Length: 362
Image 1 (tube, rainbow, N blue to C red):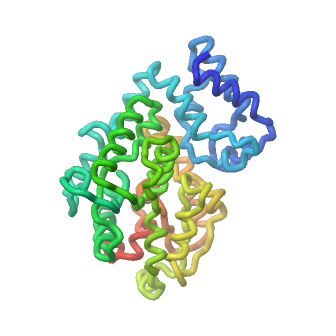
Image 2: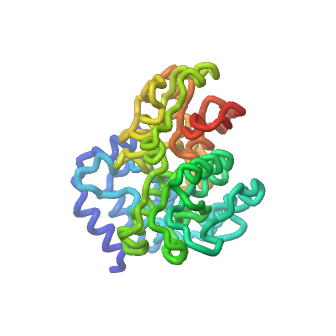
């Protein structure tokens, strides 16, 4: 039995069939399959070498982690789906080819093309000579989709002596989502080697998904245990950065909702610090927030495989926003901003937009 089959066998045994995962899946608009059944389906598919029955559940999962948050057996949907995709990846090239725009190991990736078009205001410190002890790591999404905010955040960190350089390297999440462990390991090791070569002792991370990925590399020994990994909003909150309610009210944003990030579900560190940054701004909480937050639909590369599944999740979040009757939806993640603004909404903004003036131009 290979390592993936052994894992699914362990999950089938560990699952208590309590129904909490399927309840969470129902609330989140996901395919409803408890992990004992799902694991047995994967074992049967591996045994028969026939994967038609598991293809949609595996590739349509946005890896939001809502079911994991409620699982008393601590079964990780993130690991389960990753392993399932590792099994399916070499067998389903027509599906894997759909994810080519997210191949961050290639020069043709969408993120690299967007950054080339935007021409970043600051050079990549990991491509330059010399040391860089404190590195700002905006992540692919923020640097590509919100380049002005990425540049403003770094300029502020540099001016306040909190960061020495910025890097636009990828954390590897897209390769993880594709189920390609070989490419993922190569990218992670390459990043770790660059960080070590430049003497990086702290990484200030803007993206919740990047934060989780970098922590996992450190836990696995790919990154040195001595490297500090700090969320950007924690730094900004500690510096006393606060949104100005009067300025927001003039723009028509007198009340806000916060769209919490899926990958922040367990720790809540981004959620807490962003709310601190919002200061005296009136916050109307979404029906599903913090640990129970719904996915925006962009996770797990799902929009490139199943647009209906992605759109359904997006509309669930937008409906909650409408029901809350707040004037602005604040996101913690640039991917969420892009996904939720597909219809041209100008009242859906990344939280960093409240700290620098570019938001007024939206």
